[in-house]
Length: 176
Image (cartoon, rainbow, N blue to C red; front, top):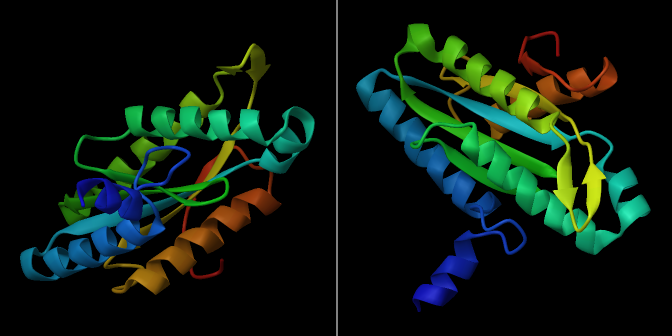
């Protein structure tokens, strides 16, 4: 039963929590924020040009790279932050339980650290592979009070970066 539960909430490639677990964590964080007057952030991290890596090196190396990326993202976040793989080359970080006046600063610091860490080349099966990341950030409850809205807004911010150069982070803004 314990093994089945692990497979239900974890991504098999990276060992990180999966989209379902991230969704539940975000729902719980939103409920906590309402009762305690705290804030939080959703970071959506998309690897830049990951398809080219799979095309060049193959899926096995691509999967090994994803595992290393997940580990590196986790190493750049706080112990209480939830890191998940939510898509093929997409990760999410949930930072919650933060005083509202510190939320943007903490989220930006996490995004900066993740972007900087991504720029260090990876050694994967005797190949040196470079990859960068684009990160969109939404803040709750400011940008939304439900899971769907927060993810949609973090995605919009991330795609805004993709359209304007990549390898950076950005907060959601209404014009996104």
